[in-house]
Each structure stands twice: as C-alpha cells, then as structure tokens.
Amino acid sequence: MNLNEFLEKTLAGLGYELVDVERSPQGRVLRIFIDKPEKPGGVDIEDCVLVNNQLSRVLVVENVDYERLEISSPGLDRVLRKPSDFRRFSGSEISLRLRLPLNGRRKFTGVLLQHEGDGGKVRLLADTGEIEFDLENIDKARLVPKFAKSGERV
Image (cartoon, rainbow, N blue to C red; front, side):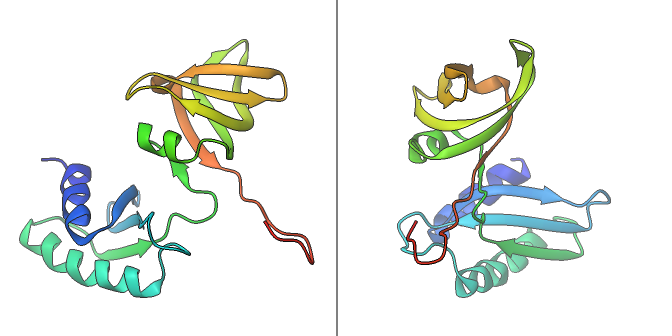
C-alpha cells in the first residue's frame, strides 16, 4: 500500500478526508492537508492536533521516514484532485493548468460547471465560453479564493 492510500484509509477511520500530501525535496518534512466536509467552518487547530497525534504514532509503526510532520487545512485555495472534489465544488470558481495544451493554452480560470462520472470530463465556464477537459489532462486545479469587501458577505 502506498503512502497516499495508507493515509486516506487512516484518516477516514478518524472521520477526515485526505486532500493532499507533500514531501519536501529531501523527504524530511511530510505535509498532510485534511478536510472534514460536514464540519461547519472546516478544519480547525484542534482537528490538526488530533490528527498529528494519531498519525505520528501510526507513521512510526509503519516505518515511514520523516523528521517533521505538518497537518493543515486545505485553505481557501484548496487543491482539487479527485472526481469527488470536482463534484463537491461544482459552481465554484477554479483555476487549472493542463498537462497538454488545449487550443494553445494550458491555464484556464472559470466556474466549474460539473463533473461527470468517476474518470470522465470536467466542464468549465471560462472567459472564452464553455470548455470541457479530460480529468486525466488536468495537472493542477485549485479553488479561487473569494474575499468579502468591507461590509459585504461572501
């Protein structure tokens, strides 16, 4: 079982979702981004402490080599990786970068219209109109953070 599968299974047992995993170039820092979709307001510091305490023990038992473990919320510019991420954030503004260019472009920003199936297509309403992408061609996709102006609510 690879590290991502192991972490996904362990976090699901704790009631959390694995969003992303990053390792520093030398592999000494292990950053794990978690979410709890049903929790209003998202992941907080208590969640990160709980997951850190549990994972630090489990990673030792599993003999995962690292020096520092960092647990974090996915943030306002959350990464979208899995088909379920694209379904969940349908209607949100995202930016994405493609592995292979489409009509000479690799970067797009727009409103995520929908995601069909588990490995299918992603539709985006961009500045040039509606565009469809193969999920496998998306190198990186992130939510575009929305900030309230003074006196406004997002």
